[in-house]
Image (cartoon, rainbow, N blue to C red; front, side, top):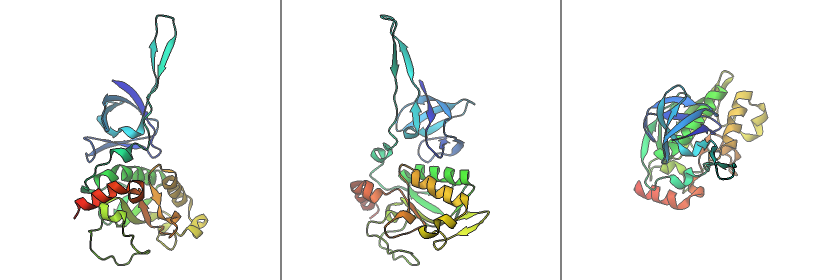
Length: 240
C-alpha cells in the first residue's frame, strides 16, 4: 500500500464502486488518501476511515524514501500520474447512463460512462462557485433531427456519443442563457459565473463552447471527436 493526495482542481468524488458507483463524499484538492488497490480506479481510504474508489488520474503519489544502508544515502522515488491519461483509458463502446449530481437541474443527463468523471469535476466546479447548471440537452439519438439549436449540429457531434451537455447557468444573481453568456458579454457576467467558466477553461479536458470559432456558449464537452477520432468512430458505431 502507498499514499497519495488529490490533485484535481475541482476535487474528486469518492465512489462506492468504480465508474458509476454511488458517490460517498467529495474529496477536496489536497486531500490525503491511502491507496489500497491499483488499476484505472484506485481503492483508497481517507483519513476519516471512508473506503471507496477514485480515478487514478487525479491522485498524485507521495514520495517514498528508501534508505540505502550501503552508503548512508536516501533514494527518493516519486510516481506521478499523468493528468491526461484518462484519454487512453476510455472504452471503445458507448455505454449511456443516467447521471445526477447536486448542481445539475433541468433535463435528465444521459451520458457515456467515460464522460461521467468529467461531469463529476464540473459538478464540483459549480458547487465551489455556488452555481446551478440547468441542463437543456445531453445525448442525442443518431438519425434524429434537432430543433432549437443555436449552431448547426456537427456531423461528428459529441452529442451522438454522450460526451457533452448543453446548459444554462443559474445563480443568486439570475438565469444566464445563450444571449447573456456570449463571449462579448463575459466581463458583464457576475463573479460566480465568470469563475465557473474560467474553471472549465482551465480544466485539462473540458471545453466551454463560448471559445469555439462558431460560438456556442451553452455547450460543454470533452472534445472527444477531435481528441480521439478513432474512439469517437467506434463509440458511434456501437450505437447503430
